Length: 160
Image (tube, rainbow, N blue to C red; front, side, top):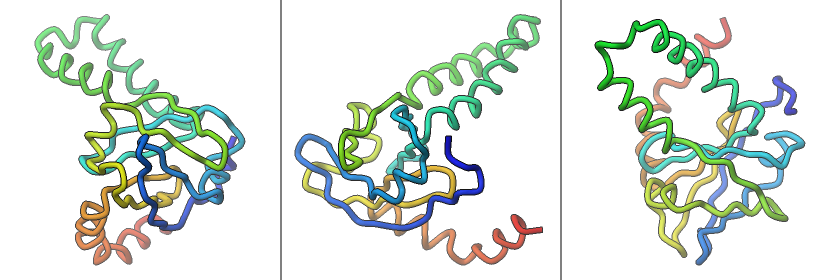
C-alpha cells in the first residue's frame, strides 16, 4: 500500500484517446502504490479521481456501516427520501478499474459523460495528495481561479 506520507503531486495535460484511454503519468501511478486494484470516483462535474482501492474502500465503508446501523435501528424511517438519494449516488459514484501498461486508464461509460471530455480533447491530470484527479481543462481553470487565493490559509490550517 502507498506510504501514507507519500504525497501525489504534479499537473500534466494529456489527450483523451479515441477509445477513451488516457495515460496517467508514471510518477503519479507510483504514488498510488503497488497495486493493480484502483477505483475511479465521480467527484464533481468535470472531475474524476483515481484511488488505490485499499485506500478508498475504508473511506466509504465506515460511513455506509454507520448508515446501515441507523437504518436497522429504525432511526431513518422518516428519512427514506434522503436514504434513497444517498443510495442512488453511492451506486453510481465509483467503479473498480485497472490500469494497463504504461499507466493507461480506460474511462468507463457513465464516467465519460460526467468528465465531459470527448476523444481527441485535452484533459488535465492532477496530483491531489492522496489520489490522482482527471479534470476537464475548463473546469480545472475555474476551480483553480476559485481556490488558489485560499491556498495559504488552507496550508496554514493543515500545518497547525
